[in-house]
Length: 333
Image 1 (cartoon, rainbow, N blue to C red):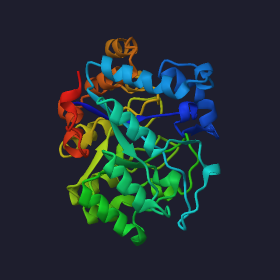
Image 2: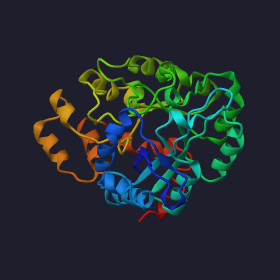
Image 3: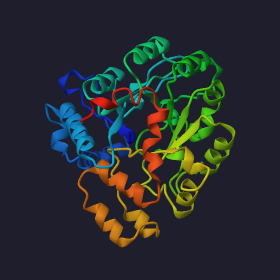
């Protein structure tokens, strides 16, 4: 079972989904790129059926991809203060858990990653509801949502996650598309308490930072892999125009022991491209041209990852890491 473990769902609330999209900062400039990456336009974004159109387009891409069998859709929580106060004004978008759970229940090609800030007044209740609804993981952006997972206040929440086998997929490294609450929470070290409690953690982007702009935490990620057998990373956004990937990082990601702990993720609707890998000598011109001609963005990203040297196990590893990832596999046709 080949799984893309990092696919964003986006919505404006059409059809009663509960989503909203209010771009701030650089997110406003990325709006045309986001819609184009899934074969849509800004007119679609502001249309009366955008949420259904977007979800339908992602489903179409999964079904037609030759390299991917399932995709995990990510909910998106609001930033919160430590006292549980939500801060919607600090967010560019919101995707409720009920929506991604419903999509996963309707389509076996989808898995659902819920997003719950552990400081919420109803965090434990929302966690139990999400577990009952079939959540495959919990996704968060600690530096964007203000989540310091090392806060002892969250111990009971994390213990329940560990007991239920619900992995934590946490953004690590650079974030330049959404407002950041605390830059220190970009380090994979934010996952130390969850790991010690026994939660399986996936450091999204493997701690990579954009060259010349942000700190790179790949060394931190590497040192933590040696200490925590329940830590993984993903290669999401590493085939994009964001300067996260460089030849030295690719060599480390594709070498033992790191390569044995990396999962495949695209980060759709972040556009995938082989342009920078080609410019840095990681991809031949012929391979760049081949991938540029692939219209399906999930397939293009997967083929790029293959050509960049990520082995087949990278694509199947999530099936043994995500909660219930194989439960509905027989229903996929």
